[in-house]
Length: 279
Image (tube, rainbow, N blue to C red; front, side, top):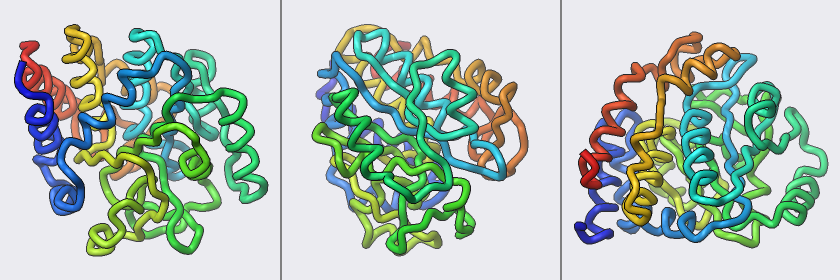
């Protein structure tokens, strides 16, 4: 087995290799080994893990975020943890039949901190992770990649991160997601309205779904089990598409993520398996 820090750095570089939205630039602001540190936290979880996801696009939700959240949910459940997907409608109503979910209010600025504190107290999560969740900007609003104010269609997960008594992790791919407040100076150089919300460990990827695969890769190494082989991006994309998802870039109901064909994510999984010695 190769040294874990070296493996983590290879994973980190692989996941921003396409550099679609400047994540290689942001990577320079992070201390190497961030995937290793985040995966170590999840590897120790045997209780509840909150997974916040769901980015509003038009009147529905985008494919980037939920695909990775579902893959990580299945992985953590198999490893004995109790994952809970935390999201707002329409994604919450889509997922609640098949997954353990907790709802977030949409288009509400009332009692958000209190609602988050109540949920944290009730579930007592051992980790909170955000995958492609819009993060509050400095002005308290939410913005998409085009700089449009989406606050009216957005559910808030920020307070779950800031009030949690457990480790908080966040995956982002553009600069407007929860966690990007960790590197606000670097993000300010991108052509985007940056998120200000911070987390304990920020993870970067060219597509946020792929960040979940990076975590699963390291969990696979520790468990000596090829958990990556069980991830089926195309199956998850079809599941979401049948329920109204859209691509976050094209805004079309296609089996794509950030305008990339599903084969791109499948290739990333193959590369991760190779790095970890599973293929």
